[in-house]
Image (cartoon, rainbow, N blue to C red; front, side):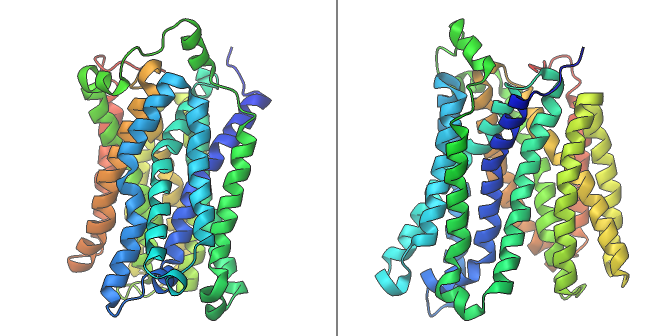
Length: 424
């Protein structure tokens, strides 16, 4: 008989999703106020240098993710999931709060950008551990037949953070003038994110250690050596497939972040107000699609769900990008929303990774693969894809998503190999 989620399971899922939501909230807020931060922290006679320094400060958090992810995951496999889970969120909330309280260049000179850079590095340390810990934590708490919906709830939480970030940024633009924002109001979103993060840390105190870890601890079955060495020695094929699967996550970056910029570009010249509304609806549809993918995984299995969503995302996203030349905005908005629903395929990625590693090295396997994959593929996408699309042809973005969908189909087939055991 299939087990249902208990109230304790529901509490675990909701509190586990908060950290991921905060991560992506910070992602949107920093980018939204990048021009303001540039003026306040990186004044320079060269506009190019100021811009580069601002975005390099933003990007530094992603550069330190692989190392911090492996280190935090190592301790999560040896001393407990909950301790690392609490620490990673605390390490994300405090720097976010501090950014909102930092003195600017006008007050303390060059120390201001150094402090901002330091806060971003600390956030990067936290980022490396938060999302992998969340997925492993919920996986080991819920019944195995609810594996899909549990992990998709974490994925939906990440996207919900994007939604909150967009909402807060929109309300800020409505409530404050450009002068007020530059003077003091820019601090509000960061302070809000930090306070919410500390509240989430407090609430996580009531979470329990995972039954899987407690059972390993009781049976003295915890990993005796260094989990990372075991992965590199005995689980190289799994680590490669897990890292490759994170490339699928970049479909979300392309469709949710790059597509709106393309729609507003000189190529298509769509009204910014329409594009912003369409992006909000698309983000919401991605939340619905992620949860739907999780439900289908529990009902029909990971491989079938992954295959189906990959095919349908390929079809709907290609039709959407082809519609951008149309003057029918309603049509464009509807197609964007439908494609974003099937972007729920991103919820399948952590499920692919988790099932590849046994419990005693699961968090290290997840932390290593997830963060290395993000560092490599997110960098390639965010820097190269927009440039190629602008220089050669805007439909390159559509072709890139088709490639990612083909990767999803390949993974759905490869996961069926008998030589690749599943540990879930």
